[in-house]
Structure formats: C-alpha cells, structure tokens
Image (cartoon, rainbow, N blue to C red; front, side):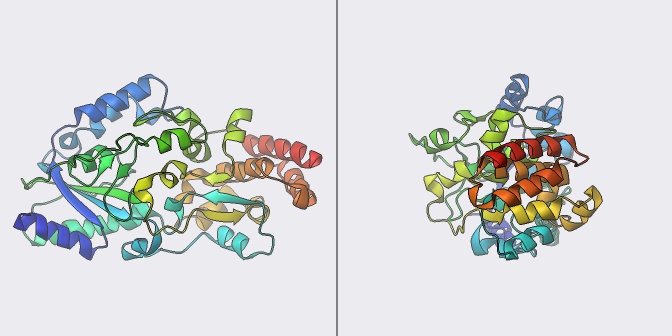
Length: 362
C-alpha cells in the first residue's frame, strides 16, 4: 500500500469510516448503460428523476466536479456497534416510534429496515466526509468538492466497486469482505488530486442465488437488476398515493424499507446484526393519526424515515395491520381503521377501508 493510500485509510478510520478506496474520476459507462436501460424499461416506477439526464450526470464525476481527478470512496457500517463510530444519533428513534415501543401492546408489529435506525445518515455521513476531506487537505492531498452521499446524483455503488471497496452483488448492493458485509452506507469525495488508485476486487457471488430466490416479491428479476415496481423498499418509501391490492399484500410486515435480500446473503452471516426493528402497529397508528404533516416533520426530522412523510408511513402502517393476524386486537384495529377513514389523505383512507374490511372478518 502506498504512503498516500495509508494516510487516507487511517484518516477514514479516525472518522468511523470502515473502508476507504481510491479510484479515478473517469466516467462509468457500464453503470450509465444499466441506469438508462432500467429507466427506459420502466423499472424505475414513478421515480421520474432517475431518468432523463441523471444517468449521464451520475456516472461522470467530472461533470459533477469539473476539477475532479480522483474519487475517495468510503463505506460506513449501519448495523451493530459500528454505526456508533460515525453516527452521533446511533440508537435514537423518532418519538412516535419510541412511544410505540414503550407501550404494553406489542403485537401485531411492523418491520423497519436497519438503515433507518438511528440518526439521518445523510447528515451524519456528510459531516464525517467533510471532516475527512479537511484532514486530507491539511495533509496536502488535494482539494475536494462537497461530499457525496446518496441524496446527490453520483453512482456511488459503481464507484465503490471500481475503488475496491467491494463488488456489486446479484441483489444490487455493494458486498464487502468486512464483517459488516453489505450493511454499509457509501459516500465519496471528489478531489482535484491525482491519487494512486486501488484495484477492483475480483470476487463475485459465484453460483449463489439466495437473494434472487429469497426476494418475497420477485423484484430481483435478474442478477444486478431490480424492478422497483415490485420492490418493497420502493413501495413503502417512494410510491405515491394509494397502494393497489397486489402492492398492499406485497408489503407483508414491512412498514419502512425491506432487508430480505441482505438477510439471506451469506456475505452477511457474521455481521453484528440485531435484526430489523419490530414496531407495535396499533400504538404507532394512534400516534400518527392526529399528526399534521408539519408535526410529523418535526418528530421525524432527525431520522431517515422522514423521507416517507406522514401520509405514506401511516398508509403503510394501516396496510400492514391488514396483512397480519388481527383476531386478538380486532376491536383496536377497527377503532384505528374507523378513525383513519376520515383522514384528509386519500391513500390513508383507502388503506383504512381495506383494514376495516379485514378487521371486520377477523
């Protein structure tokens, strides 16, 4: 390892960033082709922003930062104790979630994806990346553009694979050889320095197809190819409006995100993983129902779950309630459903009507 790469690695570790690699700022043509194909085939569902000029922009770092010559790519773990190394909000949850967890009514419970547990990773990771960029500048290792997390148009997974952080698995996630496996956030710094680059890993998934066969909705239609229209993460977070019958059933127990394709991946077998968060649904529904959008924004401001908004999260809670056994809580479920049928959001009312019908039969 060159002296410069060792400086970068150690600086990243100081900021709780598990892995660091360096690659050039050259375009990523294969990633652009994949993104354009997915958009053209409709696999981006209603995420119109993923089409147009975005594939060309996201896969050409020099268009994002004209002075860029190299990219420093990092990975930060988001399961177990590793998250505390960089996320000051580690272990914290929005007050409505915490209140639901403290109640006596434990079931039925919905699932929240692991990445959403803790502070809003965009802000926390961006702060760490900026500190890393400042440290490297002090060491004379170039000047950097603003840090890139996944809320800016950069193909960070393709960049991470080229930087030797890991390889892109059949489930479309970056898989690493570290204990954290694929349970990592990615970030990047584009710098004007010509840095010695790391070589991509030669590892592949081989013949393993556990994610392809394990996806509960068949969203992984081929290796490294996902159809968002069938993806639970998309349905719970990005899908606008009411869910149709198939989409509602597809959620299963997930109210925010989905981790199944990572749960079944053998790369993650030794990860420090406590599992998805189980949130009692009836107490959460009761907390969300009287909330305004503004109150939801305040309560969830420091959480990645703010992305869904009050209307989508409440819709999901009601839908998942209708997916789970209700005999023991039939009266509570009916009360929640009837309260929600007068909600001002049509997607909430539609989910409430479905829940009322299912609870009535319980």
